[in-house]
Amino acid sequence: MPGRRAFLLLAGAALGALFLWLAVRKLDWAAFGTALSHAHPGEIALGVACLLAYYVVKALRWRYLVEPFARASVRELMPAVLAGLAGNFLFPHVGEFARAVLAGRLLKTPPGALLGSIAIERFFDFLALLTIVLAILLPLGGMDDDIRAASYFVAILSAAILAAVVLFVVQTETCLAVNRSMLTPFSKRLAGVVEYHLRQARVGLGAIGTPRLLVPIFVLSVLQWLVILGCVAFSLRAVDVSVTLAGAVSVLLLNVIGLTLPAAPGHVGTIQLAFLVGLAPFGVPKEEAFAASVIYNFLMFVPTMILGFPGLRRAGEVLRERLGPD
Image (cartoon, one colour):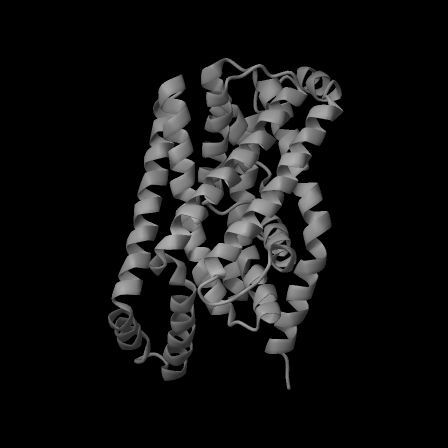
């Protein structure tokens, strides 16, 4: 596992460096500096307000997702949510384990069950994002070839996650039997450990079988992306980029697509390229798009790390307790 994490970090750093190079090549650095130096603090503050709203909405949605097997308030879940977000900035795609470990300690719930709820969360993320794209980009325009391809990618991801979740929920024992048949020849212990965590994950998928929860979860998923869209829009407004709502949605969509790949710490490079490619069809100069991306990167990273790092550190302590000697 450490080797795999190291590989993902190296791959993410390499991709981030590549994306950053693609974003900055042929950039007029003087024009970029001018755009950044004239950034409006008030617009950045509004972006921070949207970010804080995002934290609350994300924690509230998770409360609904874990309701079938655990009771918790938004306030109780917030440290774990912030720790997960901070972890994802430092070690992309790993922060959710910190979220599950920290919340598991609080709720006296196996982390596997919480990871199952996070799997459903991903499906609703992509479904809500696709809904926003179709609701805004189709009527307003902005569906160029790159954005259309990204939309198809999100639709395929949504369908794949839903198919995997439904298959596991409906045919749990069959899936577990396949797991045993594949892993037992190599290690009975490993097969047993994986089966234990899969059974716990099945508990975490309970929201899928609870119809009354599906509507509020979907509505909160849409709201979550709308407030992140606000972060994008205010980052653009901070450097006086005049762009339509469709342009902001394009940036959001490409940023999310980029983050499904290995990413560099802080998502540096991925965010910059998403802004430049997403805004190119709308005639935004590269220097202004790059300046807005730097503001957005700073806006998302700094508050999240300040608020989430204490929880991330506690999650690390919990993991060391569990993995260390008795």
